[in-house]
Amino acid sequence: MRHSVPVLLLCSACYTYAPVVAPGPAPGARVSAGLTQDGTGAMLPLLGPDVAEVSGQVIAVTADTLRLSLASVNSQRGIPTSWRGEEVPLPRARLSFMTQRRLSPGGTVLLGAGITGGLYLLYRLLGGPGVFGASGGGAGRGGG
Image (cartoon, rainbow, N blue to C red; front, side, top):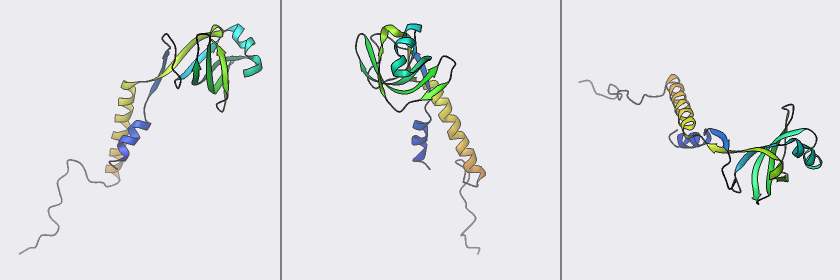
């Protein structure tokens, strides 16, 4: 059980999306970007109709274009559609906003502490020995 706790904490990290700062996201970053009204029309052949927002992993960045491996797109009505990593070039001039996924240290610590405490409580409820409990001293002694 001791070895599974660090793995569990790593898997339970919390992320937030924050605005991208110049010069832009690095390749490998996970981003979400909104399309302008013109962008929705211009990207129609690649993304389909009524796309408002795209999200995925950055493959390459130039001054004018962001190439993403798409994970999902959201329609203007908020309906998400999953993608399988198809690469799409997005002209920066057609983007209304761009945010990048970042680790949230405070949220991760709280979530990790909550999960660890919950697992310990479950362990104790199932009969596991306590950390602060006394060692079993009565068994195995000869009487006399």
